[in-house]
Image 1 (cartoon, rainbow, N blue to C red):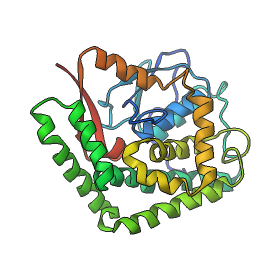
Image 2: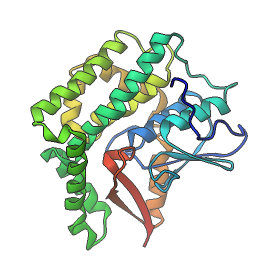
Image 3: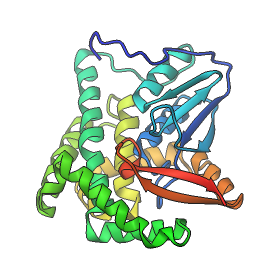
Image 4: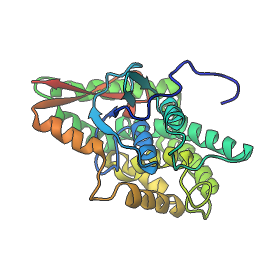
Length: 290
């Protein structure tokens, strides 16, 4: 990250209780419906760190994920991972980029995923006809009357507005596919024939890439994007490998079980569109008591 120094917390007490706050899975995604949350949960699992999960979007920066760790409250997935590395430095298992080239590849993959593929997720969920139909059905199922009559249309308008301002929404569907495929091709080339991006052990780059690729492949709202990913067999195999190892059926995402607990407790889940793309499809999951 160059010589710039963030003003977020640098490290904490390893013995403190760690809670990951975010949204539950969408469709069959391995972790959260937000790839930014999924990125952090995979990092936690690779390192064998004990954590609890809570479905809550009300973080310090108005986005998910965020964590509470003792008296530390911290948002932004990249800063969270840096904080966890510093806090659990003696016990972390994740492989670190070893060369300047590997560090550059990690940064390039981060921006391809978070600044390009993320907008593809928003596109498929809010602008693509088939994808929005899935999103609309989800919103209607999670939203009480009378809000379900208007929320899907408002969410679609806000999602399309974000895409238009960013630029992806100004293109045809074929052009969008070309743009996203370019990033997918680059990820595929970086991965090559390797098991993981930098060898036989997973690293932060794997957390980043997995979180976004899993959304494309396993959120039915992004099915058209999943078709693009499947053109690169090594990327699909990569996702399958990490799902099997870190999110087996016997040990599902803690955000899945946290979301189910809140649903049983009489929570109504509303998907409200906001301005930040760190929440899935520029949306924040809001849980409110009936």
